[in-house]
Structures are given as structure tokens and as C-alpha cells.
Length: 491
Image (cartoon, rainbow, N blue to C red; front, side, top):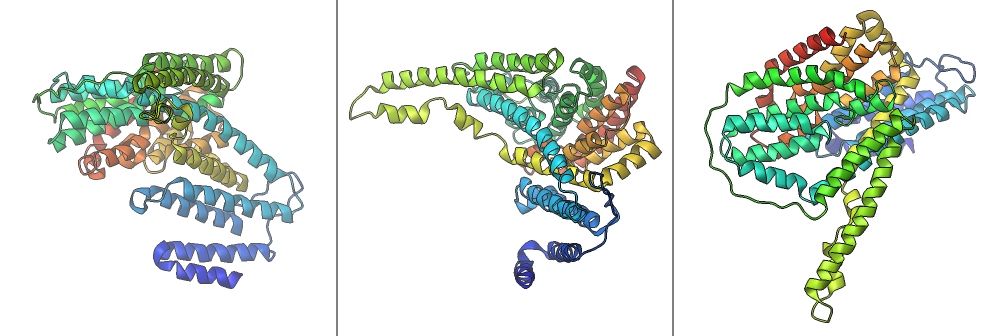
């Protein structure tokens, strides 16, 4: 069996690449040493083993690094980011479970995994409900109507720059920053067609504004959502970050706006009407947010209860829309051999489960892999070491600033989940600081946030990594200023 495994790696060498092949061979060797009786630190049943200085620890780090390199190269490999982290999570926990089994502990690993899965389940269901609402509003042409209205007004390029940035800043706290960025970028590309310089700067502005706007609301970013669901920061306390987040966006925006001409492109005549029920769905979404907040603040239930209840209400309203559109199609086509009305209705009617199927499943599965991978590394003992170095030796403020800088390179989700797993003893202002830095730190590079990566694909060849890098200095000024303002008014 082992011989066949080596043969398989050799056969796939050209496809996987030299570094992946070597990593796989190294991993196999480590696994063989583990199974054949590599000695680890002894423990009493039920106690956590320190495996940081062992083969399993080194193997887990290597597996996670290789998996995340694949995630970061998604744009070039065209490999969905969820795949490597899901596999990595399974391998890491298998290694950990084998070690604990060798020490006669059959329950610790199971309990920790169940705890991690529970945390993921709350995040998964919350995001699924939110994504469904956003997709329904998109299907009802709510966002398309807003885009058409903006491009038909005939604003100047500088006005479009500020309008799209302002809307991105104030929409992202309610909708997610990725959807907001894509919507505003569509406006910028329509208005600034042929002016690649304007499109690049406007897209940078949108990314910074969307990330900054998402930092002062539990619904604006995954990191703020995780902190809120953990119960560390209350819903109303997030709004203390409004002014620092505003500073984070306004400083680079003011500097970038100086590079935009005052030209006024001709208006694009376009009119899009919101489909039936679109405005009602916006109201239901706001009601759902209120239910999630109320469930958490007043009844001390997980916010996901309110979100899933709101999703159920949306499905009831979807049933009404489906019947109304069914009736309309039948009235227009009649019944008879010349018009298969039921077939037409099936194709055109509102389908809530079809919309649920369009959720970002790759992103949702990616969260599973990240939560389990970080949980495995924490069980091995690496998060304890990281916590002692960052929050013990460096101090909370500098550690939280470093979290923001790391999120510009590594996705902010594993970084924030690692911080929440460490659970350093910090006052409220420091938890607000790390929430903000993890959310806005990714703005410094185009690859540092989901909004930036998505816009590089949408405005391919216009908004690029290098174009964003030219303004990193201005974004870094905003980052530093927002930290100073937060410590001044909240610390």
C-alpha cells in the first residue's frame, strides 16, 4: 500500500509541482514514524498534550501552510479555496487523534472537535440566512435598480468616486462588504468606461470603504460577526468604532481623490425596476436583523435563532411570490396544447430553494476547514505559544496591530478565529481594536480581503495588485490614524 502511495505521488509530480510532492513525501514519512511508535510527551487521560515540539506538531504546521499556499494561489491554480483546507483539517485531526489514542485518551479529541463544529454550525447557519437574503434582493433586482439609477444621473468622475465610496461605507454594515464592493464596482466600470486610471483608483476606494464600513457592525464582516456571536462585544458597543472606521476610509480617500480629474462623462440612460416584493424583502431583512439582535441581547439566545426565524419568514413570503407569479404566467399564456403554462411557470416563478442553492458554498465550506484547522493547531498547543508571545511579550496593543498587518497577507478569518481561540485577557477597548484592525488591515493589499480579490476579477486588467500597491502608503496612513483615534476616544 505504501509503495502504491509513493508511485501515485511520483506519477502526479508534474501536476502537483515539486514542492507539493516533497511535502507529501515528508508527510508520509512523518505519519509512518508516528504509527511505528514515535515517543511523545506522556499525559494523564483527559489532559491536553503539548505536541508543539513533536513530529505531529511539525506535520500539522506543514499541512496547514501547504493548504494555505493553495488558498492564496486560487487565482492562478483555479482550485476552490475550500478544498485544501477541508482536507488539511481532516489530516491534522487524524494525526492528533492517533497520538491521544496512543496515550489511552479516547474522549478529549472528540470533545474538542464537537466544540469546534458547534462554533462553525452557528456561523454557517447565520451566514446562510444572510446570504439568502442578499441573493433574493439581487434576484428581485434591488441592487441592479440602484446601479442603474446611479449611472443615469450624469455625475462627474470625482462625484462618482465619493458617492460609491460613501455608499460602500454605509451599505457594508448591513450587507456584507463583498456584495457591496461588487455593486459599487459595477457602477464605477459603467461610468468610467475607457478610463482605466479612474477605475483602478475608484476600486481601491471601494475596497477600503467597504472594509472600513464593515468594521463597526456585527453584520459587516465575518470577523465582527464571530466576535459578536462569542459574546465578547455587545451589539451596541461595536458602534464605538464608527469614527475610527470613518477615519480609516477618509484619509486615503481624500489623498486618492486628488488624482481624479473633474471630467463629467455623459449619462448612460438605463432604467431598471425592482421586481414585485423587492421592497418588502428589504423590510424583512431589517426585521430579521432586529430579531437576531433581540434574541442575543434580551433573551440571551444565539443570534442565529433570529436569523433562521427570519429565513423561515422569507420562505413564507417566497411561497406567496411563487403563487402570484404562477397565476400571472397562467393568465398570460392560457391553458391548452399551444401553451404549456405549468412548464413556463416552473421556469419563471420565484424559487427560494433555488436561491439558497446559489449561496457562496465554497466560502461556507472554507470556514469549516479554517475553524477545524485552527482548532487542531490549538489542541496541539501552538495557539498557547502564540498567545504568550503576542499578548504576553508584545502587549495587547501591539499584538492587535500585528493582527491587522497579518490580515493583509493571510485571510482575516483564520487570524481572528485564532485570537478568539487564544481568548487573551483584554479589556473591551482592546477587543474593539483587534476587531477593527482585523477588518481594515486587509485593505492594505488587494489580496488582503475578499472584496479586493473579487474586484480584481471583476475589473481584470484595470484594478490590479500593482495598482493597489501604489496607494498602500495612503491606506497605511489611514490604518495608523484609525488606531490612534480609537485609542484616543475609546481607550
